[in-house]
Length: 318
Image 1 (tube, rainbow, N blue to C red):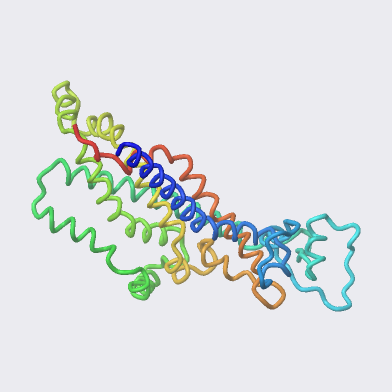
Image 2 (image 1 turned 90 degrees about the vertical axis):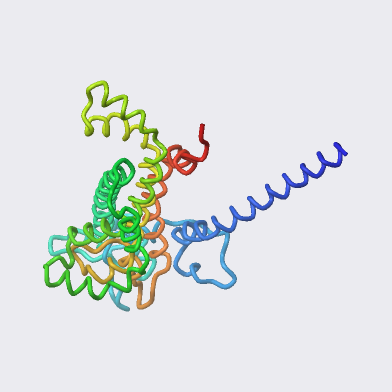
């Protein structure tokens, strides 16, 4: 019986490993496709069957960061004396536009990328800060109508953003917040704070109140106990909440498309607008998407240990 049980356990382990490999492959296949397409020549981006083996090139990234126009049939360009990156564009039948002073004109992608960083980082800091303080109040004090208030906070996440997009647009236009960083920051903070409150309340509930009571007995004020006792203990929860809030703000598309035009527009609505010679240039779109994925991947990687501990926080009780 022991031999049969051991054999069955080995088979179960092998099946579990196989299932993990299959799921991992399915989850990573789109990432591989985006990355590979961002290094493909344009004529290989939409081949059928798909081209797997190819010589990678960086022309999609050059096109992503520069403004270009299509070469005219009889237009002569100084190919030999042009910089290497400009020759890549020439080979694609386009040329990089220059200002009156001869300076290369950059595309709108760098500005949109910086806008995404400003809006996502600021709204995440505000949402996590406000959510942590609010969650601490609900966790440590008796609040009249607590259940109703928590449900009201949660109800702000029940409607998809597109449902309230038009009313918000009219309100923002009247308040002069259209196409502004402040407008998006307020919007994303309000959208994420409910999630932060509920997630952080669960973490703070698991921190024993006796820690704070001991600090109060030692002469600490409530604020000092909060900063010196609660926040360090809730660091894993704060990290996990920050990751989810940052991803939500970073990837948001509907509000960024409707509420912004040029000055405060973020990267998600800008990337699909990349047009090549009359048609969408999928290699440039893939290059913009690939670069757009990097900050979230780096941020999540840096907080991976806190994130894993945060997801299991409170699962084991003494």
